[in-house]
Image 1 (cartoon, one colour):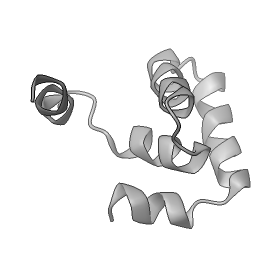
Image 2 (tube, rainbow, N blue to C red):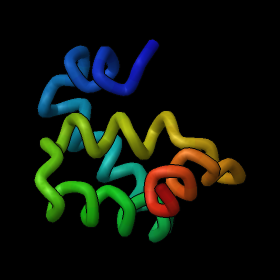
Image 3 (cartoon, one colour):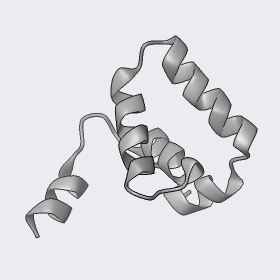
Length: 68
């Protein structure tokens, strides 16, 4: 499943539940990334899906994007 497919499948309630889970379990890194993506213009669903799918240890996609 791609990020876009996941984002399309998420309801507003599901996004709120995931954000609430991150908040309740002190997942500040995930919340920071989510909030940054929303500030940059992503919908809440897309930002949530992006954070859910991203791998904690693999930032090669971001490195490629910023170094290109």
